[in-house]
Amino acid sequence: MKLPYERPTLRKLTAGALNKFGPRAGARAVTALDGVAVDELVARFGSPLFVLSERQLRRSYQAAVRAFGTRYPQVQLAWSYKTNYLNAVCRTFHQEGAWAEVVSGMELEKALLNGVPGPHILFNGPGKRRADLERACAVDAVIHLDHADELHLLLDVAAGRPQRPRVALRVNLDAGIVPQWDRFGFNLENGEAWQALGRIVAPGRLELVGLHCHIGTYILQTAAYATAAAKLAALALRCERELNTSIQYLDLGGGFPSTNTLKGAYLPASDTVPSLDEYAEAITGALLGAGFRSGELPVLVLEAGRALVDDAGSLIGTVLANKRLADGRRATILDFGVNLLFTSFWYDHHISPTREFSNQTEPTVLYGPLCMNIDMLRESIALPLLAPGHHVLVHKVGAYNLSQWQQFINLRPNVVLIDQTAQVHLIRAAETLEYLQQLEQVPAHLR
Ligand SMILES: *Cc1c(COP(=O)(O)O)cnc(C)c1O
Image (cartoon, rainbow, N blue to C red):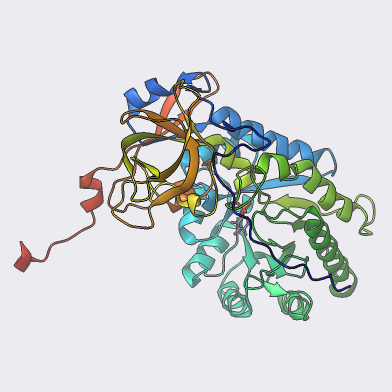
């Protein structure tokens, strides 16, 4: 049914003005992380500093396993490497039982070095090269096919191998998400996915084990997952009926939101984002009702990324200076910018001072230290006056920032992990100029 047209309206929101959350919403001092004082962390490891909480990593992982595992008999999580591939983070999840979900040859090697057995590695991605496919076959990783050219390449690679490579088909489908992600995998509705399944099974050179679908990221509609799960399940049942191939697992991908608030959202995400239990209910409800014979339910695989790691990361920074802009607004310059906080392009992160302060707050523009106009962390945030040398704490930065950060103008800083006994471990050392220049070469005539 066509939805009625609603005229868009523009409403100016004034930061710092009284609202139903009070004038000081969010501006509470946070002086310690997992029992370790922020000042002590900075004294030992410098600023800026990324801090990961092992306790929170494990808590988020276990909560996800509980949400899905209490509703469905066989559930397997595969850690999305690109979301945060620091080895300490990956190994924490692997210790908890996670497989690895990788999207490049480099990530595949990283997972192997982290001790993940090949058969527990799911290889996604639209740009696998021949050498990547050969390596994946050699270690018996499961290759998630993205397009027909890749299928042909893999059939060619498979011809020279003693063992049949194991594959899953990546499917894109209409789950009601707009815009639809149709650039990855084979489309369901136009018949492309079914045609590909025939081409995988018929020559007998590949072993079809799974169907995969990742409908997008930061998806707020649980119903979209129910639709995707139902469509994938129907496709699996058709494989069984018409291709005589039983599908071992259905992989619903990731895309579950963290509780970070998107820019422009009126309410904080912690009030609006559905819980993992609601996603689990939607997905498992669809699978349980899809018509599989009892005892023959496929394994449910999930590739949750940001929902597992975002909350566990914090970024500590330091005020370098305050100034007034031409129109009188207060601006604060911090020692980290968009180079380290890539996600500030779409999130309004929760940012706390790290020491007690007076009741007075003022709308403040937060800038990073880069000599680039785009280096603005927040257009307006209510903060108390922070003097140069004071610290700030950015919450929920564990997803994507530590893989998408840039060495640009400044070097990347230390990353530490606070373990469950409040011991602090350096898990990635600050870069040095020597590190930066290691790969450079100066031609003789320029020396
Ligand atoms: C990026 C990615 C994920 C993880 O996405 P999140 O939104 O972080 O949960 C899972 N699966 C695939 C195929 C991906 O590309």
